Length: 121
Image (cartoon, rainbow, N blue to C red; front, side, top):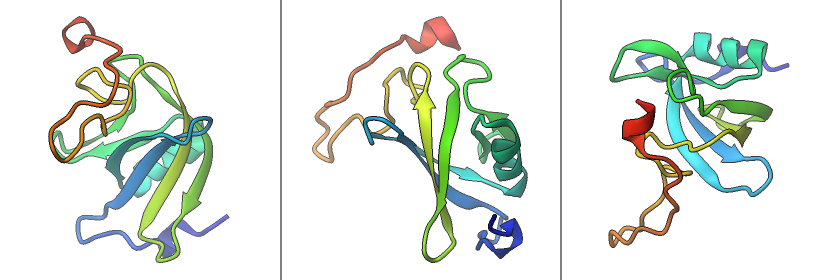
């Protein structure tokens, strides 16, 4: 296993994390992890992130129930980003879409909304 100390965290101790559906290969979301989030993800098999807005560790799906089960974790060549292959339960996006990447640069919505955030949060 790669020594987590060898990863290139930013000045805030964070590393970019991309979640991708293991089966469909759809990119679901982008977030950040600190070392503790990565360790918890490895230990539990459930993805944990560092919330910059809340300033705390959070388990994906802790309030919505939309967990991300880890299938594999990859480190990029520069060791400054992680790719987590997941089995997504429900939607990945807090706005109700399966993926956080549900619209084009032109503003066209191309994703499918699968839950109402008001019913979940």
